[in-house]
Image (cartoon, rainbow, N blue to C red; front, side, top):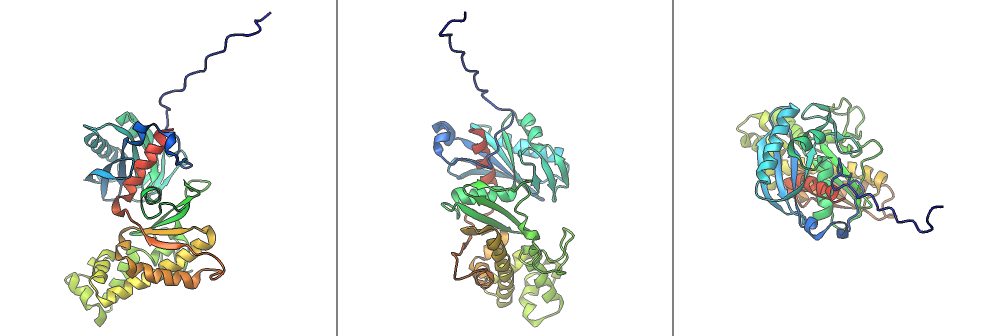
Length: 356
């Protein structure tokens, strides 16, 4: 007969390093999850853009300790990987780094391992995480750049303390991401947040996506520049300052140029920014009806216009919000972390994944 009290079977020890970092789309925020050393640990965030690759050494409080930048070396994934490896090795040469987070425009798979589609780099089904982990011999986490920016604003920036947050990034187009009940919400297939392609003007301006009337054709930096160029091309007397600012070269009038002139007080530029702000508010009202967030955080280059953009947006939001007067209303605020939000978020997401 077997003994009445058999010796207990010792538990199988857990692997020290899982093959893939856990997906932090549903992270728990409690600091008790990590050891004190890991909470203080450094992570590297990488922001892959169409023209530059930025890398930052980020501590656990979201402070950027050092930033390096390189030009994006074309669209070949192998060349971009080489640049990332160089940046990581330089930043970690004399410091202990826990993890590396990569932020890139486009769609990622739900495991955070593969770039399914990246518009700026023409990548398709690129196994970026696996390639970089092999080259770096470190944990790597992959995220959409808008998700990274939203995470950073929620953790360390304008959205701290808000459990339901929508982050809008206004640049050449419109990026977006959602924090719902303390987690990134990416949808069933991982492609939620493409807010810039909601149709707000049927049969309107042609969008690069192939549709007409997308929100980003009316409320982005590109939209602001296009409207200003059309005004200048019509030889309007109110566009003289716009023309002087670029020495008469109409193609050089960009959203950034108009934003700068608006901040300097040029009346035409202020009006143009205000019109874009009204389109922004209309789109936000649509999102409020669908998502019911407590706060919208607006970032990206166009947000540099500050209240010149946001005040018209708030007015348009109020006019178009369904049920106004019978429901609480989300706040609309400017992002706090600036252009480094993406790499801060990528670094912190990788830290969350690595400590699980």
